[in-house]
Length: 505
Ligand code: AMP
Image 1: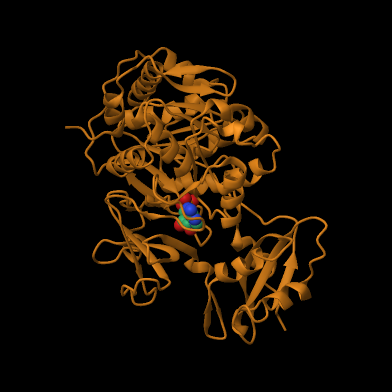
Image 2 (image 1 turned 135 degrees about the vertical axis):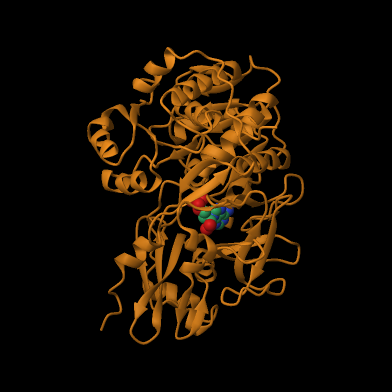
């Protein structure tokens, strides 16, 4: 039997007349419309020479058509390769050169520059897609008959390549199989109790695992509906929330919505589930959200390479500051980052995962792939964490963010938690900066609320006695905002860069 993700999704839909997508401007796509258009796209791609396993790269604005194109690529047996809309031409040169797609789809106004680049790199076809469904892709698809029979694919064949954000060295293409995507979506649908009665408010980008796979595949497998917004806009989300039953967001969504006076218990009466992930949700945000809305946000943990690994429970207690339990079928263990030996329960170490969700490897990087898997198949996530006595997984930061000062390990999260608890602090980021005596100097960057008279000496005084001396920041800086990427992650690499000469003699 074909394990093509598209075939599995299509065969699970009992009611093709049901609305799958409603866009922010009120356009609707039923499941029947969605499949008809996806199959036109697939027919077009195969007509353009796309063979099973060929990459189809896409850098377009978010739209219903763009999401349906993803289904079309998968139906055609191609490998979908979404690219962040923020990438520049120089960055695209690397991605296209590395992935060698047969087809590239870009925004209509990008064709002028991207077209020649793609042709030079050997791309056979460049098509365009605009945010309103305009462009040559739709034009060409119109003349292709619907009813394309999806290309049979095995569970282990590739469905997508997503490049990692590449904060350390070159960005790597994570190869995701049909079964990686299908199994994870099926697990999440059940774990989070999605049914055809759900309406998901979708305001995430669709070039990233969160908006593309978690949100969209779960909705598809449940046969549910989405209100599909081209971007996150707090006012628009507040306006539409009463019509939704669920929302998936990055922590920034929740922080911003808390600033809206319109956020009340009444405004989220119909919601059954708020999910957060892609970056740590501050325990304070979790608590404030509960106080304002009566809902406990369900936090989960995953990454491009692994899809979702852990989730707080649906029925049992959702614990602020944790990412919950390993999902069914997923094994999580904590190991010594140096030796790879499993650590005792409660100790902090490297989070390793294994399961049907874990990717096949990095595109054309066999050594990198080999270096990040243990001999028994566990993937070394690069995240540091621990499992508490109730089995909840806690993330304490990325391995590369670990600070080693005077030979001692400092987990930034521990220092950040202390600083964040001070009155007047909104949030903080603690980084290691090159230091002539200590190797790295612990350095804190703090966002304080307006009108608070916090200063460096005050923060240091408050920390004194609460943390071991070696963990105390050598310097504390105040900023208006921490630098974040589109998924809400604090970009510590930018901060490290900004302060890199701080302790130079
Ligand atoms: P990405 O591949 O862009 O999805 O980034 C994955 C990384 O985001 C993980 O390796 C974690 O470092 C981080 N991450 C994802 N979800 C969470 C979470 N709930 N809490 C803390 N960090 C998270």
